[in-house]
Structures are given as structure tokens and as C-alpha cells.
Length: 270
Image 1 (tube, helix red, strand yellow):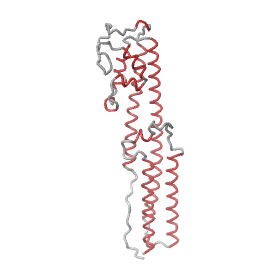
Image 2 (cartoon, one colour):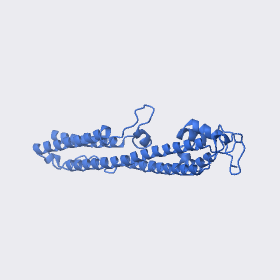
Image 3 (cartoon, helix red, strand yellow):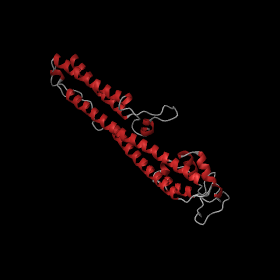
Image 4 (tube, one colour):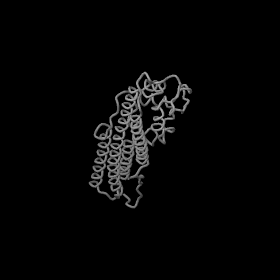
């Protein structure tokens, strides 16, 4: 064996683009959710303060009250009809978030139908006043919309903790792998080579454990069982480097382990 021969060294990265993209996505989604939670809270406060009328007093004949002079033409909506105070509040809060056009780009009717339900959207279109029953339904629907975003927000916080733990473990694996490949393989005794192989096996087992925890253990974020609902990873990472950043990183470091293992095998053949 020739001890001065060069060892090929695979590239390693403790701070990968994959994890960096995932964290940027988490930050962006949290900002969006925080804005929307605040918007729905503002919507509820303002709707709660609206003076309601009896159901038979709500007007659908296009007449405009003194304080309801704004007309908003909308697809499927009669531009001559006065804008409901609830609709005005919705436009000023939920649809006024900075990211609305970029993320949604819907008209008010489509937005209400999506966020609440089509029946409430139709009722809002056909009613110019604030019937008490409608006011209460919108308050309840807005509360549900806000709470659903809070639940997703909690999942994002959990996902960040998972990414941090996984990144720490993968970085530790890479550090040990670098130490193994820094050994002068040609000068190692058979017993030392065997210990290096055992060390590589241990690193493989750690990679397997990280992947297992991510897929079905305490690092797994369960999604609804319906096939029509995107998985949490699809919702969150669809436009990033990988829709499964932890598994991608484990695959990468596993390839690096095999590269070092093959290096040892080649030197044994010399």
C-alpha cells in the first residue's frame, strides 16, 4: 500500500440549501397566518359592533342607506345593490391583508364562499342590512376560520422544531463521517479498517432512525386521510427544493456514507 496516495473526499454541508429553503418557507407561512389570524379577529370585532336589524327589515331592493353609499361591482353581484356592512368589513379586513392578491386573487363572493360557505356568500350578496341571524353566523364562521389557522400555526412551530432537531442530528452524523474519512486508509491495520466499517454501520443506523422518526415516529406530522386533501408536506414545501427536506437530507448523507465505504474498499484492493 502507498500511504502518500490521495483520498477522494466527498463534499459535505452542515447547512444545506434544502433546510434553508424549508425554514424560509416556514417563516413566510407563519407571517401569512399571523396576518390572517389578526384579520379575522378584526373582522369579528367590527361585525360584533355593527347594529343589527330584524330579519324582515333587511333590504334587497337596491336602496342605499345614508351610511352605505359605496357600490362594489362583483361577478355575480348586482352593482346597483348597496354593499352590506358585513361585506364592507370583510373587504377592509380579511381581503385587505398584504398578501391577498398574490395568494388568492379572488373576488369577495368567491372568498366568502371559500372561507365560510357558499350559503353565507349568497346571503351576503342578497342582503344589504345586518340581520341578527346573519351577523351571528358570520361571527361563528370567522371564529372557525381563525381557529383553523391557529392550528396550522401550531403545526408550523412543531415543524420548525423537527427541522432543527433533524438538522442537528444530520450535522453530527456528517461530523463523525468527516472524522472517519480523514483517516489514512492505506496505513490502517485490518483491525482498524474493521472498526471504521463498524463506525460506518453505526452512522447508517442513525440515518435510518432519523428517517423512521420522520416518516412514522415522533417527527411525523399526520395529515387528513382524505385523498383530496394535500398532505402537510405538499401544502408547505411544494415550491421549495424538496417536499420532504428531512428525508432528502438523510438520503444525501447516506450517499456520503456509501462514498466513504467505497473508498475504504478501493484502498483494500490496492
